[in-house]
Length: 330
Length: 266
Image (tube, rainbow over all chains, first blue to last red; front, side, top):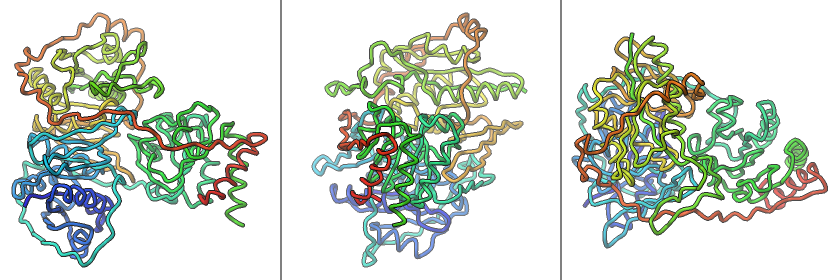
């Protein structure tokens, strides 16, 4: 039986959150096309991790612990995934839109001469034809495009982070674990990892925050961000920014939310002085509630937000913050 | 030291086009160009040009060649990298490239690069703002069989090697590879310079080399798409924004907070 293969990433000894999301997407496809779901695990693999992958939806787990796979260098992962594709001949390969997954999937697709779709928000299998269609944003999120793969397998699909919700863990599931002896030749590795530098930002990580207060060009400079920070702190949340803010150097690029920045999906996303260009919305549109403060009533952000104030942020924000503080402390 | 760099650049619809003017023709599955808004060089490709110029300057010599594939170039637009200081430009312009997908683009770029001769470095924007594929550079590195370094925010050239700091969500990773290599960049590498008057004058005297697919010995089947575009549409936002209006802006802010409490959001 053919299968849908996912690259389940391991980070700092634990299964990456995208692995569950990929397995959920793969289970959807597998149900539609009557296929198995397999997962590839590379690096330092424990029984806990293989067990988790099975509980989250894998029927087969291929594991490889080659020393070259210890760090997340794309070259080794491309080579290892290629060997699994040759042995298992999957119908489709799913990788996550992480720094590793968004490179490994496309590179292997080109190496194998097959198609690849980046940043997919949905995947659908058509039972009768067996064809897979993916939906992805194009033109900076201004439009959505659906692509249908041609007959060449495997079909490579890079899935957007948080586009799918992981299935509930089911520890009664049983999976087949296949330990693979990988042979990764030295000439396959063209890039060497010298060093990993962590730049921990203070407080809650943007991707993990349940409340985010984001500022845009409309704030006029870096100083007002301290007011956004004050509001974010009340919720134990984080501060984000539009690309214009980061390009202007008001904040570091690690704060950038959007198509080319971070993808976030907090419970509450508060924007201040953000116009809501598609490029920005592509990174936050899956937030549960969006609230906008902007002086331009025509701004696109009001088409995306559920609540908004049209007004001068310098007057709106302090009273908003003060009232929030009262409400939270009462 | 002298270094020869190829920068791949794409002509795209201006991403600053207001969403109100943005429309698609779902029948032919194409985005409708907006009258009066000329195309631009893709933003990240301009970042790649800037990075290339800085590397050439630091090396104290060499060449920066800009390469592009398209079906209808606007010469005033495409000459911008030359005005910024690039040495030469190769444009693959062919009607057959009108609906070229990523796989076809990789085949064309690869053939053009092989034809252009020896190089030390290929620089590409991480993704183009039209189709947002973000995999043409990756495919190019595979086809050419050279090291692939992505999302560089800093590039240092050594004797026969290159060291790159690649952006990560919580910091960066330092990678090293031998030359020749391919590197992708985005806005984090730094703002592209504005063309100077002298640069514009010099660019006006340069003529891009214009080639067709047959000049590259490419056949139509090498342009066959890997996927079929089955639908193209503008997403409809389901959000209905409730505008909160108070007596003045400060009052609106207060009422907004109360509203969020009422809606059990906070």
